[in-house]
Amino acid sequence: MDRMQLSIKKQTLPNGLKLVVNEDTYSTMVAAAIIYYAGSRTEEEGNTGISHILEHMMFKGTEKMAPEDYSKVIQKMGGYDNAYTSKDYTAFYAYLPISGLETFISMEADRMVNLKIRDFDEEMEIIKDERRYTTLDNPVEFFMEKFWLNLFQTHPYRFPVVGFMEDLEKMTLEKVLGYYNAFYTPANAMIAVAGNVAFEEVLDLVFRYFGNISKNGNPKKDIPVEPEQKEKRFFKLKKKNVSPIVAIGFKTIPFGHESMYAFDLLSEVLCGGKWGILVKELVYEQNLFTSLNCESSYLRDHGLFSIIGLPAPGQNIFRAAEILEKKLRNSENRIEEEMLYTAKNKLLTEFYFNMESVRDVVFELAEFELSAKAEDVLRYPEGIRRVTIDEIRSLIGTHFTEEKETLGVLHG
Image (cartoon, rainbow, N blue to C red; front, side, top):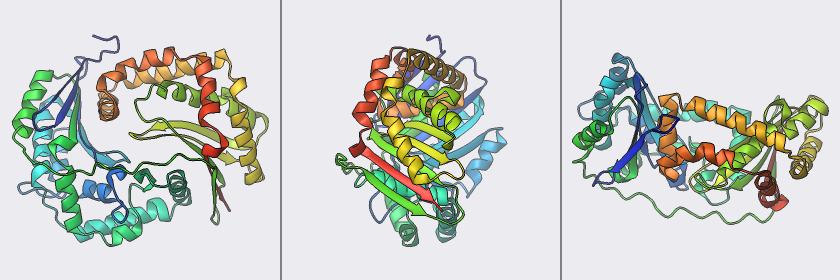
């Protein structure tokens, strides 16, 4: 067994359902999730937010399960459950005693084919309220929504997960059921399990409850291709009584790409703690910003490297943004071996710490299997260790050119 105590096994059922399991003999609990490949990525103009809507409706019960019974059953066993929708997928998960795994699997199999949506109009009002308080009434989130709309011109990653209000207003039960029948099928789903379980026993359970499901939808496959960005994009948003924000973004590599390790390290080198190049100079030495955060995130089709900055009080936000841009492009030759060494140690510490939790492991397995291979999670430490300083430096000149930049400014 790997020194991280990961023992990954997987199999695909004849009906297309994927199963990924990590056998962890040290865990006293089990984490389980079912992932459907349905998110903003699989949505179209006019139907934005439908993946998130269906996530809500999945808790409305089935032919034999009353609304809210699903969560009550999980809680009665001493576990908890939740769900979320992302730009790539929708996940339903539970953390519970090992004895409850069969119940989780049986209820998910029931929900895959026997969903009975009740109180549709009432739930839609809740979702529209969520749209209002999370985005429309939240200047920062509204600004970040505009950021994604500028970053992507044609790819559905531009759509907000919660959907546009005009689409929510005209959403119908028929549309949601059609989406459910198309996307919530065995061939468009994956079950991930982590805990003190035997793979063969989990496989038997999955075969027992999912093996005979022949539901065969027609998921959308023709995802629009985002054209290459050839000129800088800039937008500004003015809102009353807001703290100014600068957001810089670059589309990068998709999940599973070999350069993931280098981008993760670059995030730390630029903004990691007080020693990161940009943080040290622009926050602590020049007092231009009160905070700077770099993040490298990855989706199935694209990645995003972003820098979010909060200018210090009294600073001109447009001048601050211009200085940040220049410092970013001039940081290539300021990267030192000691910085890279520190960044590697930090990321490895975080990785090993996360691998101690079956809750974290189950999502690592799911995300790696979704876009690459679940086994690739085992390669992460070595991938981080072998990155060279030249690789880190080259990312700046290759990916952070002016014509590939999207810059947004939120100001009062």
